[in-house]
Length: 384
Ligand code: TRH
Image 1: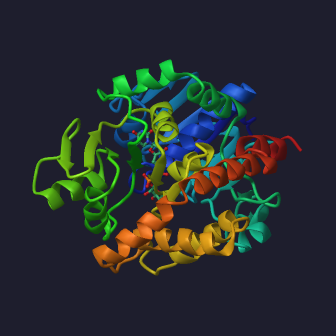
Image 2: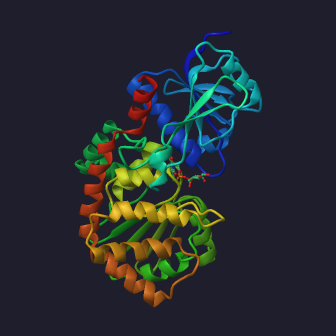
Image 3: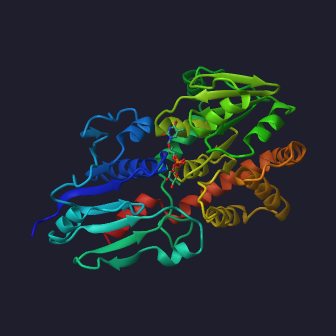
C-alpha cells in the first residue's frame, strides 16, 4: 500500500489537431490558478502542445509552465506514485502499470474520466455515472461537460470574462492587438471574420460570395487546414503572414499564438468561425456571433451533436431567425456545395440580422455561466 501523491494528474493523448491538449491545458491552468492545486499534466505530443503554448519546449521531458508540471507521457512512463486525483481526458487510456499503482494507493485516487462536450440530451443521464474496474479495486467517474445544470458545465472563468470586457472597453488594447498582427485597425464599415475551421467543402463558394460583398471583408485565418484550402483555391502561396485579395475580400494568414492570443482574436472579430471543442466554447465566451464547423465523424454522428447544440442555442430566437441561422450553419458543415447565387442570398439574409445575432450571442454568454464553470463543478465534486 502507498499514499497517493498530493498532485492532480491530468492525462492527455493528442488524437489530432489541438482540441485535446487545448481543453486539458485550459483546465490545468484554471485548477492551478483559481484553486492553487498542484497539477501534473501528462501529454503524449509536446510538439502539438508547443504550437498553442510557446513556453512549452517540445524536447523537454519534464518542465514547469505557469506552476504546472508538464511531463512527456511516453508508454509505461507514468508516475510511480499516482496523484490523489487522476483525470483521464477523453478516455485516453491509462496503462496497466499505472492502474495497478493506483490500486495500491490507500485511499485510491479519485479517478475521473473527462468526456467530450455535447448538448445532446443523453449527457445528463451519464454525467457522474460510475464504473468499477473489472479486476482492480478502482472506480471511475464519468464527468460530462454540457449546457445544463445536470452536467459538468463548460470550461470558463470570471477572470477571462473580465479580461474580455476590459479589452473591448479599451481601444488602446485593441489597437495593440491589431498591431501585433501587423494589421491596421479595421474601419467601421469593414467586416472582420476569424476562420478557424477544418476543410469546409463550401469554402471556395463562400469566398466567391465574399469577394462580391457590398462591404469590405477581412478574413483572419490561422495557419492550418483552412489556410491550405485557400492556397489551393487561389493557386497562390498562403503561408504565415501572407495576404491575398480578391474584390471586397482580403485574407490574412495568421501564425498560431497561445490561447490568450486566440481569445483576443475572437474578441476582436465581428464574426467567428470555430471548430472542435475548446475553440467552440471560447467563441461562446467571446459573446460574438459564431458558426461552428463541427469535427466530422465518419458515421455522421456529428450532425446530431450539431443539431442538439443549435436547438438549445437558438431556442430563444424567433422561428424565422432559427431557420436562417441553421441554414447558414448547415452549408458550412455540409458535404454538398450550394450554388454561389443561393449562398449569396442566404449569407446576405444572415448578415442583414447581424445586430440580432450579436444581441443573441451576448444573451447566450450570460446564460452560459449560470450552470457553473466546469473547473468549479469538478473541484466541488471531488471535495464533496
Ligand atoms: O483543433 P481542434 O479542432 O481539435 C480537436 C481534435 O481534432 C480532437 O480529436 C477532436 O475530438 C476535437 O477537436 C473535437 O479543436 P479546437 O477545440 O478547435 O482546439 C483548438 C485549440 O487551439 C484551442 O484550445 C485554441 C487553440 N489555439 C491557440 O491556442 N492558438 C491559436 O492561434 C489557434 C488558432 C488555436
